[in-house]
Length: 200
Image (cartoon, rainbow, N blue to C red; front, side):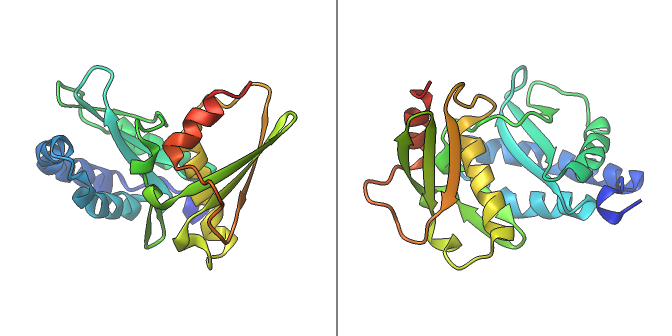
């Protein structure tokens, strides 16, 4: 089995959830105090130690106060994500666990992790040119200007996913590109969400 398709060692998964038990309450407190970003690096490191293509997010739970989402950044990592979630503790009033890729309430608050880079979506701007049944979206972020497509493409995918979630426009085709200069009359991601929501 290729390394990127491997399932993490069960003992390593057990250690991850043991570590999670120590941070679950401090993380919930940090979310309430709008300082959860301090938990991003340790959570990222703990999950990528299990598999380099695991990703995570936190969001309000459906039954608990909070939810920890663990997903695969690549199709090959889906078995790894499923194995980690299968070993998750039972949900309670504070935390539940899922593989849902929900759009954040404020897409500007998203941080995209690509390798060692933390790219905050608060710096992302977009211009939309709507022609007939096609909307051309030009994204700009100052950190992406000189980076390769191997890095920028996943960031653009994450930005669009944060804006749309699983509900793209029904009849409008979206074409996404990265531009090297900030567009005139650029929208932030929350404004882009409102614009795209009005498309057929």
